[in-house]
Image (cartoon, rainbow, N blue to C red; front, side):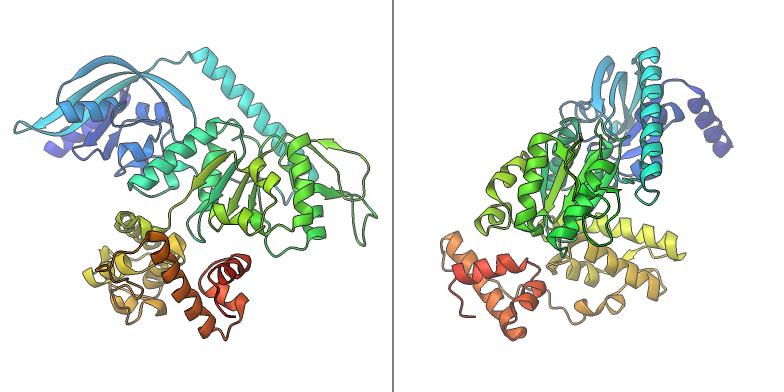
Length: 469
């Protein structure tokens, strides 16, 4: 009888035109009705169970009406709240919010929201965006059917509730509202393209092309024709073909590992950014383009100019907005959340039924340095679920790098003797670099790969730390 009553109540709530949104005492989302999903354009499967500030990074503990009621226990009525959802849409709602009490204890909060955006303005906006999307896709498909832009991620796909990640998503959403160049710094596997796609999909360019290009390991002449296009006969085998700047016109061009771009090509890229015009290889004609460039580096921002990986003038042109993604080992509180996320993902993919990890595995994960960051964690979970059966992921299920792992820090310093921080850091860097060189017979390329830094950075540090090589 109670189940039927509950089902009838849910059906009635879903008929209501106003949005209804419920969070629990910890601020995690537990329910949306149909109207709330439509109002906020929420992907419910991704939002349920997430903290409200994860899903609404433009809000804060002070501006969220739900969190205010949760904190004070006092209802609020007919308060206007303006926010940007995780897709980058500006929404205005008229909210009435009530605390949910059980045995005189606050166990959650319920909010009723009414969309106060004018229907006519919204309809006109949707029609305009649909027309732009159609025209963009039609033009791109006519040029090259294999170059259709795809940006599938948004801020809700970025998993993390640590202070660092909440701040990063909030800044990323603000960056999306701007049209300035963005430089993203982060180690391999931290999710740089995930953040870039989220910025694109929350910007006013979201219905325009998104193109990504890795600048590493390509000779200058090949990368130049890829970026700027070519005309027939300009070099052996060359055809009339648009470059990525033309394909990304109106949208976003993501240049990954920009610090690996050959220096002679950096000068041409700088000219394009300054003038907004490109010239195909072998052509004397220029073409106007309107492209937002987002770049990424996999090293410290301060090093890219010091080690002359980037021209200083190009660096300042690209580095208008800076976002730094922290390494996984620097946001350990996100590891259990990420583990749960990846277990669910690969349970669904592999038709398995793992419910979690053992305490020993959790200890290993919290002590491990994660040189491959979030990507390495995902692969560890994927490997365990793909190869084994059971309810709990145990130590014997983990990949080779975790076998016989000792949960201590091999490079811990003697803290009984206080040293200046820069001296202590240099001491640890020196030990790691010497160890890597010894393990690779002083092959700098292999040593750089072993400790996950660019070759130029390692050479710079060897010289700076006066390490014999």
